[in-house]
Length: 195
Image (cartoon, rainbow, N blue to C red; front, side):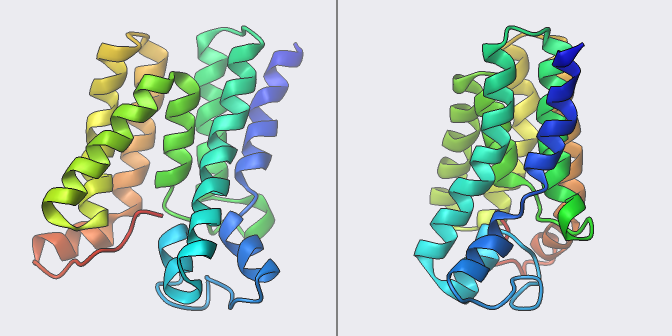
């Protein structure tokens, strides 16, 4: 069925690295070779400033939102919508166009959650903002918001497949932030990591 094309298409869209493309267009260094070496918005801000970072953040969010929103608009079953979201997210983490070395996935996961249901994405962003205002540590904000997202999905959406997809993204996000978690536990983490 044509609906299944959403999954590979979402992966390919997710594989488009906003950070690398924006840096090339703006004449900035390759984010994989500067700063933290991570192709995400936080590292782009380190090497190129707020404007480049904001565009990168928007691009990473849209590549999670657009495929899921399109799948929702087509009225396909929730299992395929969840798979579409996960495909876009995995594409960001492991992009086929860039040697399978991608970002940490926070912005793309927000886009996916917004595509699942707008209130779910807003709950993630509100949690991130609240924790950041309290602690001023971006990585901690992302980790808390991500950890809570399956709970939000359960109460806001109530669909098991969406909850499962949110849980899978949380597991990947925690894994990709393992260095940040170690620094947090050691009291050495600053305002980094929401990529």
